[in-house]
Image 1 (cartoon, rainbow, N blue to C red):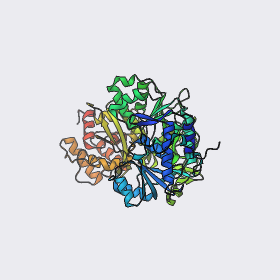
Image 2 (cartoon, one colour):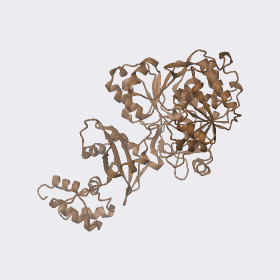
Image 3 (cartoon, one colour):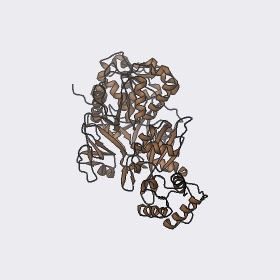
Image 4 (tube, rainbow, N blue to C red):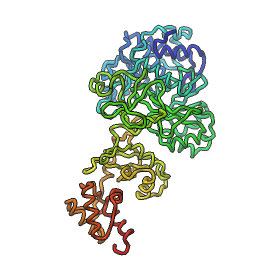
Length: 590
């Protein structure tokens, strides 16, 4: 039988397994497959009762994550579905519902909620899901009629099933339309790499208004597996492992980090041995967290790389016994990837450039955005905006977003590479490096660090540690201590927001020279830089220093019998640091 859409694909699978626990939780219980089909048909019929066309947008706003899956399967079978974050404000809902040209809102929110008030303001039809969801629908339809019309629904493979917004940093996020064909291709790719089957039980911690959460859910159901969709709650994690008995779970790196910390507090977690694998996506996973997770659960972790435009997955690290690469986001499954230079020419293995992708799971264009579409595609390939390289074995290594690559005096540096090194330091809990403006170099490097409890280390120790693994030009000139890092709703680091958030910590307080050496160095700096007021903690390069002025500085200092290399100046570009070096190196004539 020819599959017309993703709803039919999952409907056929559910119909073949009557009575199996498909999805939960609903009052701490699972909805059985036949009950699930019942509810899907009821919702679909209500949608069609408004004269809905397959091009019409049906928005979904749900408190319960499992409810989002049910409503997607109903709405996408006959219209275009758009799940939205239930925590949006009235103004946000009004913008998104209007921007999507929404015809119907399905929600379980209360009457005075922002979602319903925004829908009423825009005169959008509302379906009250609280009267339909599991436990309330049996009187409305007989079970034997469940699913009888879904196979003959209106949507076809090339129809848009899902519309999601990008998580970009622009004022107006882009709309990504995904067809049934895109979604089915992605389900097949995910199923293939993880060998999903009816025996699998997925614990899904990711919100289902994100492509990560929704596609993992659909892939599980399409293979006859059981799905448990809940937010991560520290105090309930062990009981959910013990009661639901998942064979795999998926989460973003921030949650993996929390689970590692939790396992150290609760030894019972480390005793759980039913996981076949662990999946990580939506942001880079630090190597140390991956290693810790595998030690705790004695199960392999598969880091994957994906995006909304690819209907989730682009590459993934294969499961054992297949080869994996440390630091890589894996190999492509079911699509093609390539690397191009600034002239859009394809590069050979091991050469870095922009990552481009092509395949059945890749969307065709942004909705109503001619400029973005023109910039994002080249000869059928989608330009991801990510920078990386492919090795000789076909494994992809990501350096970061093109916009986030740091250009320090012509040297292009991956912030992710710097983060990974600092995360290996025993005192560091989390790390995020970023570019800061520099008058001579164009950009310099700063790094924000969250330290572990009772950590005792110094900036000098941290730089010394980093110098063992990083070239000198990659070592941050500024290290700041912070309590948290800016992140989006999915826990993904917002690197572009780091400078603005922490710029007050980057401001150096003036401290006048005190010792004889500090006074001499200050006078030399004033002469070379043409700056009158210079503090001992000011950065030589921030004050206008460059390579030529650094050479002049070295020559002037040499007149006093003190010799420095350019590297020493680059690593210690302040009067206080140079004075300390002089005292240590030239104790007799200092």
